[in-house]
Length: 441
Image (tube, rainbow, N blue to C red):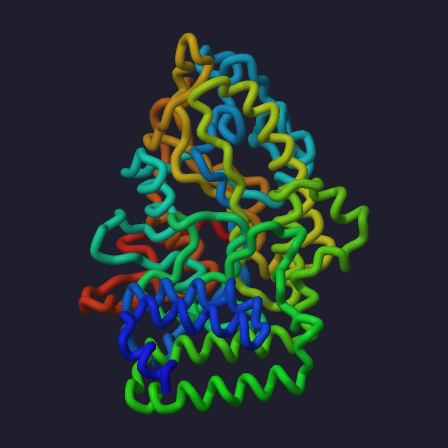
C-alpha cells in the first residue's frame, strides 16, 4: 500500500526510476540497466504509429554493420588522396587490388580488400557542427528541439523485424546520443547499447545469491504489483516497459547470449581485428550478425583533427585499417558478406587546406568520403569525383539522404513509406533521399 501511494505521488520519470531500481535490486535483473535505458528514452519521446506490417521490397542485404567515424574523418588522408597536390600534405597514395581505386599509405591491409568495396568520394552535407552532423548522417533530418528522428537501425527493426527473436535487432557499440536512436518509434526499436565490446552484455546472469526459484517468485510479485496499474493505464508506454522486462528475461535464458561473448572467438581472430575497442567492436559485430542481429553500429571516435592532423592519422588509421580489412575478409570467408552490408561513414570531412601553425584540418561538409561493401554492392568501384585539390565536387554529388536511401534500398525498406511522429507529422526513412541504384552489382 505504501509503495502504491508512493508511485501515485511521483511523476512519470520518478516512477520509471523506482521500477528500474527495484528490478535491479529485487530481481537480480542487472541486464535491465541496459535494456530499459532505451525504453525510457522512447517513453520520453512519445510513441505513435500503427503496428501494421510494412510491405518490403526485394532486398540485396539482410543485415548491416555500420562503422561510424565520429569527429569528422579526413578524406584526403584516407580514401580520396590527391597525389602531388599541396593540400595532400606529407601523406602518400597507395595502390589497391582494385583498378583506379587508391587509398593513402595508412591502409595496406584494406588495400588488399578493395575489390569488395565501393568508395563514394562525393559526399556532401548541410551540417558542419559535430552534434548536428552526426544526427543528420544517422537520420537524414536536421536536428530539431521538438522531435527526435529514428536512425536506420530503428527503421529496419520497425519495418522488417528481427532475424532472431531472442536477440536485440539493433545494437550500438560505443556511440552517443547523436548516433543510433529509435527516435519517435516504439521503445523496442531503440538500440541495445554496449560499452566495452570485450565485456559484452555485462551483468546478464543472476547473482549467486538469487536462485531461479527466488527469481521467478519475485517476478510474480512484481507482476501482481503492476497489474492494477497496467489495467488502469492500458497504454503503449506502459506495455513497452513491461515488454522490456520480458525481453531481458528471454535474453538471459537464451543460448544466443553467447553471441556477446568474445572469449568464444579464437585468439588469432581477435588479434587480427586488433586488441582495441574498435577492433573488438568489429569482431563483436560479426558475431552478432552471425547469430541473427540485423543492425550493428560500431563507433570509433577521435577524428576531430584540428591540431596535429598527420600525427593523429598515424595513430587512428592503422586501427581502422586492421579492423575493417579483417571484418571484410572474415565476413567473406564465412559466406556472410553477400548478405551483410558494411557501411563506413562520418559526419563530414576535413578541409583540404592545412591550417598553418596547427598542422591540422578544420570541419568541411562540402566534400567527404564514405564506403559501402557487401550486400549486393559493386566491388572495386569508385563513385563521384572531387577536383585536383579535394575542395570541390566535380562529378556525381551525393547527399546524406541519398546515401541513407541507398542503405535502405539494399535492405528492401520502402523509402516512400510514411510513418507519423507523436505530433502526427509524416516522415520517411531517408527524407527526400533517392537511392543510388547504380552502385549495386
